[in-house]
Length: 217
Image (cartoon, rainbow, N blue to C red; front, side, top):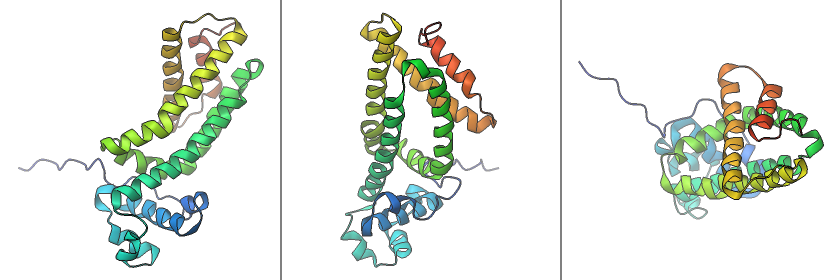
């Protein structure tokens, strides 16, 4: 009796990204190629997709594709940079807009906004993360482009809010609270999609309590 074949962690992500999504962020031939690459990786997975597949979708020869990108990894990293840069910019705008007097409402609104963006970018995110989490180079790129800048920006916002609310916190404690804030926010989006609910106000209240801002925010 044979065992069940293990799933390929770099295989195709469920769902298909809307055509032209990356091309809208990166104009010109380069954007067309990246958009085609996303379509191929979403359908076949990073491991299963090839430069030949991408060239076919673009409508050029494989040698012509290599004039733009030296290989599949370079192409995928470029795709990560474009998508990650866009998502990072949106996250920064949300963080910068947060004000002490409207914190709860803005956290709840941010969850609604991110859920909408996750629905739109879901296939992109699944394609990128399914490959990146199993490739040290790609994971490092995501960490540098998105995760570390987001944590740094969030830390600055938490310091600003602590000062506004009169909360004393040393650097080590604040760093731990920032990680907890980040984990709760991101985790709540994932569980909301999985469970099909939208407990945005409850999550906002949980953030306020966890951060020690209860009675101030």
